Length: 183
Image 1 (cartoon, rainbow, N blue to C red):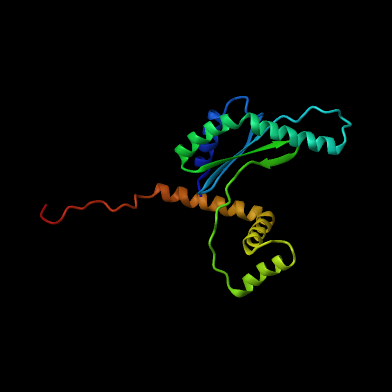
Image 2: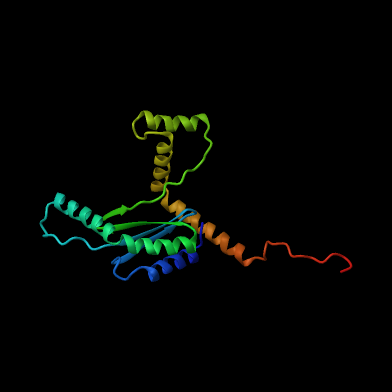
């Protein structure tokens, strides 16, 4: 968990480091322990106002693929600098025509211990065809909770940031070297 100030500095670093013509706008920079995800907006393809939906969707997908190939070297150069500086992998994504696409990004393994009733929930999702494995089922559950509790999670994150700020204002937690008696 990083503070709002650290997140702002990270976003500022990317805004300053990215080539000016890479994105129309830097939409989002998110970070966790393993990964930084950078998402920018790219221009929509120019189409007739009455273009059919299928044509519009195909044009947006084509624009995203073209952007990904054309900007690969520039994005890799920025990612190398960021990975060295921030000690996290960098992933990329774009928004175009109302569609958000993430390029290669990491899926970090998470270990957990579940009791039988919790495992039965996962197994039910597998049996119902919602997930292929317990891992997929657990990820589905996390996405569902995330979707329905965004406000609560945002409030919790703000509270954690406040705790970090208060801790940072306190005395150092490192014990000072105290001289032995007689020194």
